[in-house]
Length: 335
Image (cartoon, rainbow, N blue to C red; front, side, top):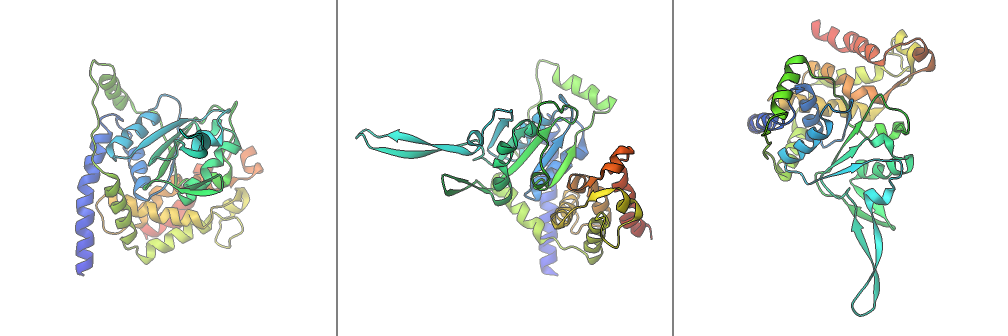
């Protein structure tokens, strides 16, 4: 009981800090509360996020603001077709000393930071995209036969333009699976857009301020893993993930008919972790099934695919996810 009280006190304290972080972020990234909460959840889980949105919606501004608010050392890489792996990871150069001796010296690439913004990640070649795979999963890179650890915490926030396909290289499924969530950044509503105009076209713009330090974020990530999870939430996660696998006995006829493949175990891990983070942002000690339902789209959509027939008939993956969530999770909540 004493441990539960300590945990609740720590979460309550963190709730106040997260609320302050929200305020600081929205001084420069106005509105879009769900987008902000999803990115904060990604950082609390120690994961990576893929931001999907049209140009001019503030994706770059959001990542830059987060680096300030969370106190993280950040770098930005503009992905282009001619970008090479060494441009991200770094490389060894031959250095001549004052005595004429020559030695190889490793020059760190931009990946040696705490928050890497991979801008328009799908514009780089598959060879360069793959340079991020080891870093995102193992938090280290191998260059010239030597493993080099990255700084802690380490996060990648990548952006993509959903409508521009010419000169792009779609991310392979293995790389998409490395992203904890896929965050859609929509158009702002009218009132929000009016606030953006007022805030960004004057002589002075609001500035964000630092709320967290890197060690604070790591403590929050450790705290997240200590949060208890009820059996009903655990079963809801398992039920939902397995319901999207077309060869599973619990899959609906719509899933069997329309899905090419479904999410794997990493999807269940990601859904459980983000449900905890969603509860933490709300100052709750334990996540509920509502959290699982709320996070199904951003956690699962990039980890599954419709088959050719379903795409040809204009079926929507988002609609199928929503229908399955209603049948598997929300129906149980109502009951």
